Length: 88
Image: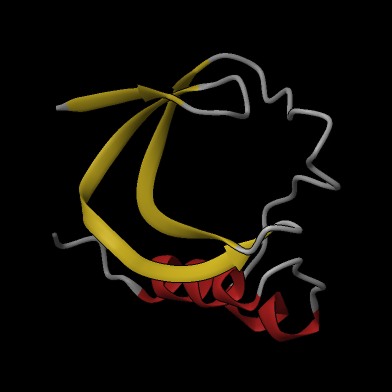
């Protein structure tokens, strides 16, 4: 079992391998960033997002295309996690 302290202030257990790797440029200088998405199981704590998080909510696959994401790769990441059947 691998555990992490998620940036939303909760304890989470990582489930399997990454569901998506995406590169993009970020910020004025165009710094390259590698976004890595994991499926996790919440283990404890209360969700308390940092001030750079606009909203936290649970969504279904059917709602995904109607949501506004800051980065399109985040939509792909959430889709991959929701479509994953849990076998890693």
